[in-house]
Amino acid sequence: MNAHAFTSDVAFTPTVKAIQARKGSRQSYARVEERGGWQADITPDLAAFIEMQTSVFLSTANGDGQPYIQHRGGPAGFLKVLDQHTIGFADFSGNRQFITQGNLADNPQAFLFLIDYAHRQRIKIWGTARVVENDAELMARLMPQDYKARPEQVILFTVSAWDSNCPQHIPQRFEAADVAAALGERDRRIERLEQEIARLKGISGAAAGG
Image 1 (cartoon, helix red, strand yellow):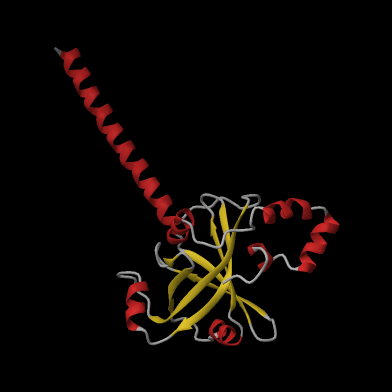
Image 2 (cartoon, helix red, strand yellow):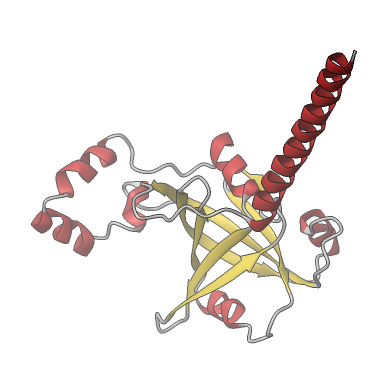
């Protein structure tokens, strides 16, 4: 549960608010606070956005406060919304440094950053996370079907607050598979049009010969 006066206080510390006041943005963010701050529940729209993603950045920090960012990816749906406050995913075997797991053992505070380049959208999610080992039932629930990766454990992320960023400065990029599908459809359309042109030429030639 969020113990802050406002959900956005998870990021807007007194020091941050003092800087906002000095630089002229505190008033606009105060109005957000008057409306209750950022949302803490995972809405249906947010759930749909999360489960469409094929990539996520997970930020943790160790007991000394040293931050670390880990990238995780998989097929769309590898991130699963389990309830209004919980996101879960299978943690696939990687280089076995276990920095994220070690950080979470010392400091459960965590952050998810999701970015959709095609639609130029990004979502920031604050919360806590924990690693779950040796839970076959949960692993089966979270493991993407037919995905060729070796799951090692599960990460459960509990949402405290979330906010969306404006699209400014996000480059528009597209997934290779989406581009290939669009080009394939274009090529099939060109082929159909060429066949239709050839058919019409044949009819025209026959009519002229008659």
